[in-house]
Image 1 (cartoon, rainbow, N blue to C red):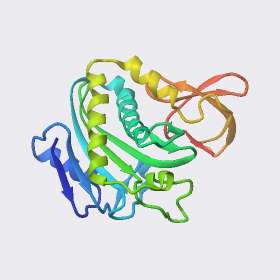
Image 2 (image 1 turned 180 degrees about the vertical axis):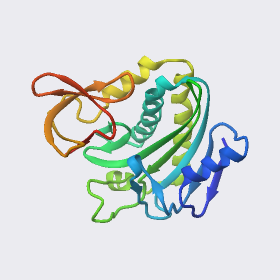
Image 3 (image 1 turned 135 degrees about the horizontal axis):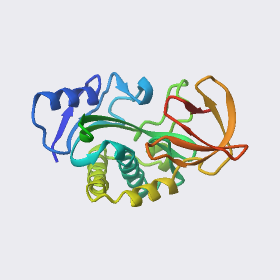
Length: 243
C-alpha cells in the first residue's frame, strides 16, 4: 500500500489520473490531502471539506478481467467497504443512497466518485475518489442534511488510522470482483439501499415530481422505481433525483 500525502491539491482524482498516465502505478496507490481546494463529486458537483478535519483521498485500482458491463459491482464494492468501516466505528442507521453516497439516517456523511479507464470491453483501472466527513462539526448553510463521524459519535478520530482501515476494506471488497462474487455484492448493497421499498418523492429531469418506491438496480446500474400504477421504470443518474 503506497500512500502519497499532499498538504494541498485541487483534486486528488485529477492528480492521481495524471500520475497514472505518466507512470506505472503500484496497485492501490493512494493520494491523500489535508486540503482539497476543488474536489469533485457526482454530476460535476463540488465536494467541500474543511482542511485538516476530514478524509479526502483517491485510490488507484487495477483490474485484470472486470468487464465494463459489470461496473455496477465496482460501485457496490466501494460503497459497501466504506459503510462497513463506519459500522465498525459504531455508527448506526447507515444506508447507501443510489448510486454511492453514504448516509447516516438522512444525512450524507461520505461521497464517492469513480472514474474508469476502459480498454475494449474491460475496465483496465479505476480511480476512486472518496470524501468522508470525519472531525468537522459545522458545515456551510448551503450544505443541508450533512453530518460527520464526530457529530454522530462525539469522538475525535485519527485520520491516518481511519484511512488505512478504509483501504484495507476496499482491498477486501474488490477481491470479490476478481472472484466474480457479484451476487454477494448485490445482495449486500440492496440490503442497505436508502429508501428501498419506501414511498418517496422524486423529481425527473424535467422537474416533474412523482411518488415511487425504489425496487432495485438494473443490469447496467440504473435505478428501478415502482410507480404508483405498479409499473417498474428505469432511471439513469441524470434522469432522476430525490425531491
